[in-house]
Image (cartoon, rainbow, N blue to C red):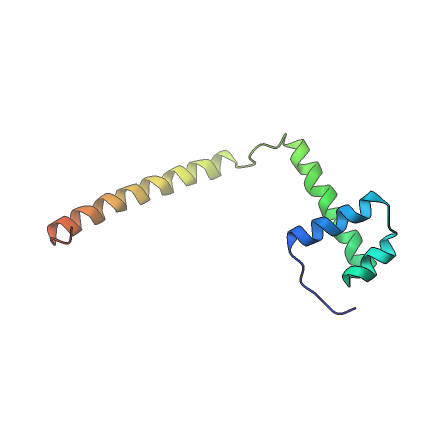
Length: 94
């Protein structure tokens, strides 16, 4: 089958269509121009994503190290914004 690029929304809709069970997967794949192997890969990823979300209780998976790094970068950006404002004032650009 020709390789086609589907958006995440399209893939989700195709997987959900298959999970409904109203139409055989073979027909769904033919209709959307994908292989059954591709459908089952998408379905498995769909299930894995849901499983991960339930395990983390839908919370943010950002680690403490990541949060600390984000805070540090926000401080740097804030400092640079202040420096830019000072430089603009000194050059009479404001």
